[in-house]
Figure 1 (cartoon, helix red, strand yellow):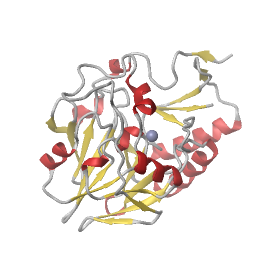
Figure 2 (spheres, rainbow, N blue to C red):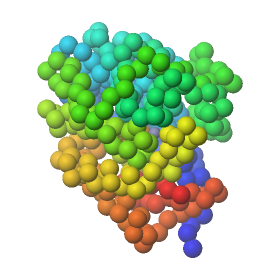
Figure 3 (cartoon, rainbow, N blue to C red):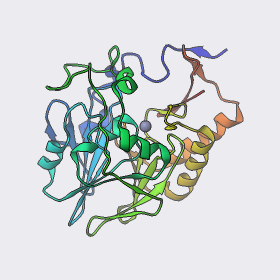
Figure 4 (spheres, rainbow, N blue to C red):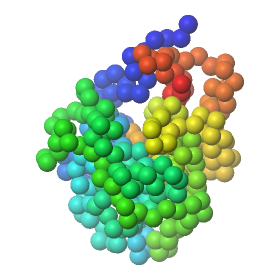
Length: 297
Ligand SMILES: [Zn+2]
C-alpha cells in the first residue's frame, strides 16, 4: 500500500525548511522584502522569492554589452526596479516556460522571448486570469505580509503581446558570452534550457530543480506536463550536460550536473513501475529520491 500524504505539491509547513542552506554560502546583494538577490559565480544574480512556497528564482545574466533576465517571477511586485539596481546594461528577457511563476513581470520589459508553441502563444496574448492563478494564494502559501500594492483579490498575470517566439538553437549574444536555447518539453510543452557553453553552465528552468518536480500538470490551454516526453528530455540533457553546473529555478539555484543523470534514471524507474510512492488526496503520486521528488498521475 502506498503511503497517504495530504498534498504532493505544497509540502506541509514548507517554510520550516527556510532559510535553505545554500544561501549562507552566497553573497546577498539586495533585499527589498520580497525579492532577495544573491551573487552567483560567472556574473549571474539569482533573484529569489523566498516567502511564497514556490520559492521561485529568476536570474540576471550579465554579458559585456547586454544582460539576459531568465524569467520574471510571480508578479506579486514589479521586478524591474530590482533588476535595474543590479545592472545598467540593456536587458532582454527569456522565459524558461510560461507557467505563472516565471512570467509575472514580463509586462515590465520591452524585449522578451519564449519557446514557440501554441500554449505559449496563447499565454503571452492573454496572460492568466485571477481564476486561473488564485489557487496559488490559498492557506499558508505565502508567509508574512504581501508586498505593498499587491491585492490577492485581483491578482492575475498580465499578457505580454509583444513577446517573440523562438526555437531550439536560438542564441542570445550578450557580448563575450552566448546562451543557447535547448527545447526541453515535459514539465510543459514550452520548457527550455539555456546552455552557457563558455562557462559550462546549464539553466534548467522547472525541468530540473532540487525539490518536487511536476510531471502531472494540466491546463485547459494545453500548458500541460507529459511524463513520457519529460523522460526522453531528461535522458537527452543528461547525456549532453552532466559535466556542467546546473542552475535551477526553485528553492536553491546551484547543483552539480550529475543530478541530470539521477533524474533521468528516476524517470526510467517510474516508467518501469517498480518504485514505491506516496499518494495524496487528489490521487497524485509522489516518488521521492535523494535530493528531489517527482509527482505524476
Ligand atoms: Zn513550471
